[in-house]
Each structure stands twice: as structure tokens, then as C-alpha cells.
Length: 267
Image (cartoon, rainbow, N blue to C red; front, side):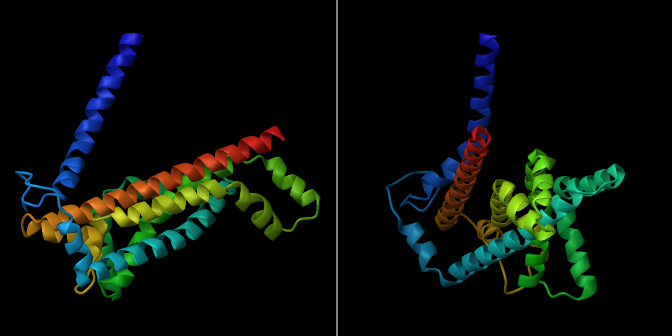
């Protein structure tokens, strides 16, 4: 057993090295004064200053965060409603069908989703740009929110709702004062996951982005194709660090929800 445990730890260590080594390599050379990714000549913040002095890039950053926040907020609302609808569907066949359709969107290749949205927006006449990117991000974020909220709904005991109804609570009271407070950790988790996916998405965004509008992922790709520039390293590092902050925030919110639930059970 001990030997298997050591082998598992070694395997995980190797996997993490393979996954994170390129990222740390990129971050390391974002501080290189030499301007290349071969010889580290000295420490500098010049490339980070270049990022913050680039007006066009700052506008793209603003676009990215506006899209991410709007899509995460809207998809969270729609995802919660979708999770409630799936949870309280009486016919098992209909419920399984809805779950399958939701999961298919999660596992579908981004290239297929992006191409499908491109064709759809072209047919119905939606101009590629802010609106098309926002609608696309909402579409692929909603299933993620549903998956995050559904387990919390399944954990909730039906007796809570029955007790609230026995005390004279209306449907709105049951939803706003019983169900939503109970599934709040799942709602926050869904919001942060949707926000992270929107910030990091490239494939879908690449298909539905028009002239004059771009996001960070597409901009980084475009700059990387033009040649080696350590400003791309600096920009990628900042985006990676921000994503880590979001993940840590999700972790603490999830832990807080678990502790609150534990205290409620003890009482």
C-alpha cells in the first residue's frame, strides 16, 4: 500500500511539472531585460510597464472583463433557473433528457460550438463583435452553472420546503428565503467558474469576434503569431495570476458554505 502511495505521488508530481513548467518558464522570462526567451540577462519590469502603457491593450482588457462579468452574471441567473427546472421536473425521462442536453454542451468541442455560433449569427444578421461574443459566452457558461448548482439542490432536504409551506410561506418566499440561501455556495461557485471560463476562452471567441473588437485571449494569440515579444509573457502572467485569484476565491467561498452547513447541522 505504501509503495502504491509513493508511486501515485510521483505520478502526480510529474503530471504537475508537465502542466506548470511551461507556464513558469513563460513567467520567468517576463522579467528578462534581454528581450528574448533564451538567455536571462537581468531582472526588469519593462515589459509590464509596456503592457500598462498600451492604450489599445487596456481597452481590450476592459472589453474582456465587461464580457466576463456580464456573461457570468446573466448565465448565473439562467443557470439557477435551469437547475431549478431540471430538479423539479416530475417525469424522470424529461429530467434525464434535459441533463443530457446540458452535459452535451459542456463536452462538445469548442471549435464546433464556435463554428455553430458563427453560422447562426451570420444567418440571423447579428454583427460580429460585442453582442456576438457576449451571447456566445452566456451560452457555454449556462451549462456550467447548472452543473454547479444542481448538487446543492439535491443535497437540500424536501422537508425544509414542506415546513416552509406549512408555516404559510408563498412560492416566492420558499424560493427567496429557503432554496436560494441554501444553494448560495453553488451559485457563487457557478458564477466564478463562468467568469473564469469567459476570461480564458479562446476557441469560441476567435470564431465570433469581429473587426474592431477583441478579447485578451485572442489578442495574446495574435501577438504571439507576430513573433516573440516579452510583453506577451507579461500579459499572460497577469491573466494567469488573476485566474488563480478567482480559483482561490471560489475555494474560500466553498469552504465557508461547508462550514455554515456544518454549523447548521450541529444546531
